[in-house]
Length: 248
Ligand SMILES: [Zn+2]
Ligand SMILES: [Zn+2]
Image: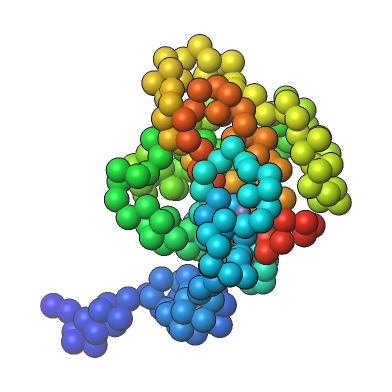
């Protein structure tokens, strides 16, 4: 028979520390106070998720230079503590931070797509070049796509490949990034042969990326997907920089 004390301890569950303030939590992610304090309530551009200074709906950048994607939903701003957790996840494969950030993105996605009708029919992760994939043995976008696919019950299709390794883009302007990315992302030959691709003709997909900075990658990939017959592309990302010209 369980003693009343043990029963009470079992009810309390395992105590873990909040990732931000170290207060005890039930889940080991963020405590409810931090969850609230770290909320970002700013208006964002519907198309690229850039924070807006007024309630225009679409930012000047998207109006002047419209991308091939329809909508961007991001979990958080690319600033501390999220940028720090994102680097832990991406560069050091800290899945605890990966789960924390993905959960925050899921909350935003549930708000953005309240019913299953408006949700994409497939999730497509941003590919790494095979050499980089071999060296890193971890594609953070594929990992995210699998978590999101499981949560929303949407298939994940690794539809794309990267034809060139691509140098470090961090120091480049958006124009330079866009020029560098021309023709770099292609539909994977395996996908062209498979019967699944024709079934996505004119359908709605979401591109899964860890962070959106200049939108150059999202623009290049959505152009290729539209060119390959996809009807609508949305972007789902863990974080978004507050300015498109910001380097990180
Ligand atoms: Zn906390
Ligand atoms: Zn925009």
